[in-house]
Image (cartoon, rainbow, N blue to C red; front, side):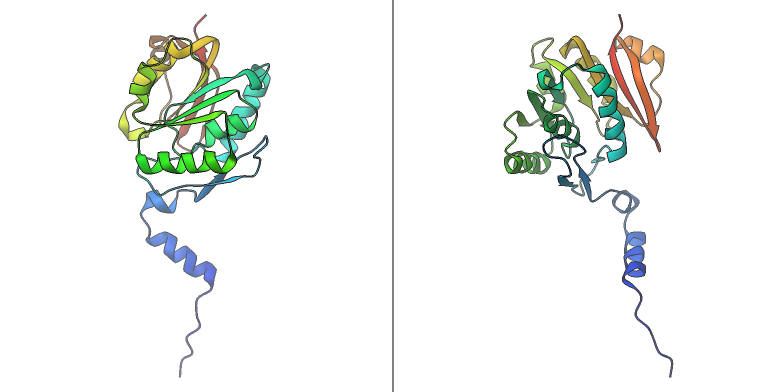
Length: 213
């Protein structure tokens, strides 16, 4: 009689991942805060359409850039227009930013953000449940030192978001943006922006931008 041995848990897990849709199988189940007072805090990632958190290694690089370009993060006011997991904005707040606004359109994700903010007792962080561009349109010019833009790639929102972000920047303010394709100099110039730093992680292009001088 043939003996059937149970598959290892690792093999079973691999089979399970292979059976999932590509979007879910490749999505991280959590991200972590890299530095500051909430360092190593884990943030669960919901299985929500369009949710694509910035990987840990990309945030490490971004905040290395900011450490060299921003004299005092404690004076920084930031807006995360497509907050998702909140990883970008919470990372900045963890490092002492004086104000961070997280805007998220999906009610379930906004509720998760508020729960995270409450758990961390993050008093400098505000969660706004609503449309990102509509919220930005209501804000006064030069309201923020840093604007994070990581919209769903299939929504076509980045051009409008870049134009909106420029209006909200302080004189020395910067925009961090992610895109599935390279942003041409002409496209950035149309938004009155130029590249300070840029990088690539897989298919994602990411940029730190400022106004054209």
